[in-house]
Amino acid sequence: MKGLVISSALFAAYVVSTVVVSHFGGIRRYGKVFFPAVLFWTPFYFALYALTPADCWFLPATWLAKPLWLDVVYGYVVYLLNCHSYIDFFFGFTGGFSTSLLREILASGPHGCTTEELAAGFLTKDGQDKVYQRRIPHLAEAGMIRVNGAEHLCVATVKGRRWANILSVVKRILNLDKGG
Amino acid sequence: VATGVVVSLAISLLWIVVQIAWMHVRPARNRFRAMLAGFVASLPVLVLVLGSSPVRALHAAHFMEPYGVVFFHALLFHTLVFFCYVECFYHVERAVTFRMLIEIASHPEGIVVSDLRKDYSVQGMVGARMEVLEAKGFVVRRMHAWHLTSKGRLLARVMAGTLWLYQAKSQRDREA
Image 1 (cartoon, rainbow over the protein chains, first blue to last red):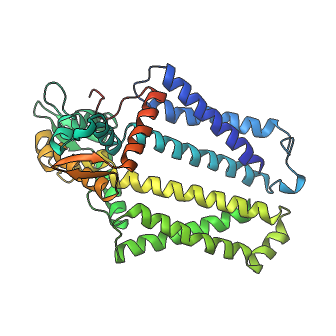
Image 2: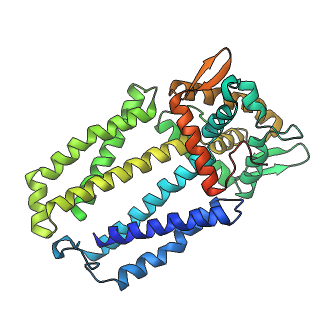
């Protein structure tokens, strides 16, 4: 139970810190804040676990888990699962494709939006679409693809092919179509 | 902790395997509802297993934790694993970047961006996503235009609040 108590306190600290940094920090790439912050708070979890009394000042003696290592690991796994849900919520809401479409329809007022109008919102001033213009360089940056020549020929690297195969297999296991 | 975690992991694994197998036999239109139904159906199983005499006896022989605490840990962990599974499911199902990577990798000689766009255009992406949102009751189509339902409006407002809180830009408003 002690692991869970510390894990909950740490998760609260994680949430508050990411909100404060995001709100006041002028962040451009949120992934570069949210993922490292999980690791940033990790040593605090183990330090707090080691430095606080076994009963955390209020836990009954029978509630203390044995073996101790399991309680430590359990608390940390709960922290990771909570962070995963939180990051997923953040990217799902702010970066999500669907939610961005819903927001666009909300902004359109009583007239609503046609599919063409919604798609037009994903074009840059020079007529390029934002969906590709942003993701292709990210995939190249991650070493998944190479972009060759002026015609922008995209070729999957070995790492990219490996990931594509894994994703295809997982999609087949889950009985999903192409998606996206 | 140990009893609760082991039992909840076993039951989570069981319902996930059953769920995946069921989706091959009879694919659900609303996957989230199907996953939620699977999770809810697994809860009585979790309680039954935890309440069974062999598990209780095993716990009593090795641990001192009250059984109420074991139930609490089991339910908490089971719920967190459910969230994680649903989130991972949607990462795989919905991620536009993953779809792009699979498309590129399916052309060993490479594919130019303009051809990629033809196979998987932004208009196609938007159209497909709007159909999903319509099926889930977030939008309705009237006279060729999309309108929000009350559920869709609520989600759009939550999104606007979240964007303000994190000072973030939506996917559409971001520069490339």
